[in-house]
Amino acid sequence: MVIGAGHAGLAMSRCLTERSIDHVILERGEVANTWRTERWDSLRLLTPNWQGRLPGFADTGNDPDGYRTVPEVIRFIEDYAKAISAPVETNTAVTSVGSGGTGYLVRTDRGDWKCRAVVLASGACNSPRVPALASAVPSSVTCVAAQQYRNPGQLADGDVLVVGASASGTQIASEIQRSGRQVFLSVGEHIRAPRVYRGKDIQWWMDAAGVLDERYDGVDDVARARRVPSLQLAGTSDRSTLDLNALTDIGVTLVGRLAGIANGKAQFAGSLRNMCALSDLKMGRLLETIDAWAHATGVDTAVEPPHRPPPTRVENSPPLSLDLAVGGIKTIIWATGYRPDYAWLDVPVLDRKGMVRHDGGVVDLPGLYVMGLHFMRRRKSSLIDGAGDDARDLSNHLSSYLDGRILKTGQSSESDSSSGYQSEVA
Image (cartoon, rainbow, N blue to C red; front, side):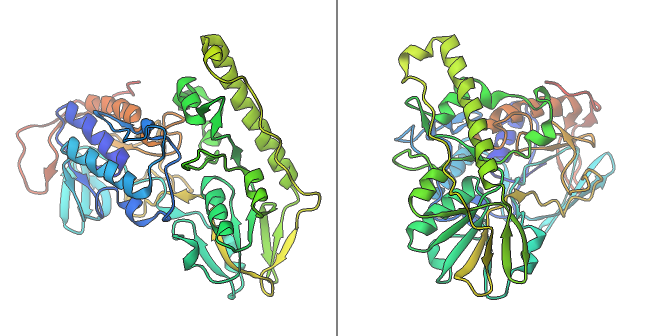
């Protein structure tokens, strides 16, 4: 049983089919449901079209170096589901997954299923991570999670505070500022990166140099690596860099990390300059890695020479507070990240933060797997391009454990045996 018909669930389906493992994909809505219901209108993928590689399928479109719009992503995933003849049961919401004899009992709003193995591919971005201090926002200010944001037209007149300066926050801040509103961007930890470096997309460099293939078991602190924010990137037709300097250039006001809200006033940490300097340092390390690879492989001679973007500009005295009660801010957008929603998971595999305990996608309980999480097995695990390698690895493991058919409750089976739980196959 695969839960979720996004790119990760479909990639796993293809790999299971290649191994002649019968399975069903349960999807609460339509194929690519999250892209249909939880994305803002102008969003484009952060990865170039050529990076849309899935098992048994690669469609770069008419512009391999372009970036898919939301409708194009939906069509891409739909086309993949059709190309692989994915066995999807749409509009089937899973209400619980629990133990069921020798396997699992999956309850849905359209009936129950029994199966020997379950792959959780329901997504890593089901619920917004809104900080607890949001409860102190004055009633005169409307709060919107990035997941709920669609376009500037939905917002009340007035200034906007965007909290979070990773990919979502910077893109939303740019769009709203360009619409004529004044935007304040609250900046915490972030990772700066140029869209194009030495004449090639930064994703090309990270792909070619093996940065995206770095494995979870090859880093010193995988828990920390999994918390690293997404790169400040945007997929635009002109392939421009969207960093804090670009936002300052169009009039966005940078403030520090939101530290608290008291008596209607938002209070910001005084660490903005340090945060920006640390981000510049991390970007420099990434570019040094790329330069070293280019030199070692002889790519140096075929591309532009190395260069470094100018440091992030920070004004001498950034605002340390904003009066939300009487000031001009009428909307706060929480671009503070997302988390999976496993409220329907009735097996003891969640940690104290509600996250699935797993080792590279292999969950603590035999026959249970997870797909699509950030840095799950590789640095690229959360990208469309990363699902294929992860699915191949996990289907390897699953095939060593599973030997049988997925059954609807009450049906008989021609084969219902298991090879037993084995250690992970790399």
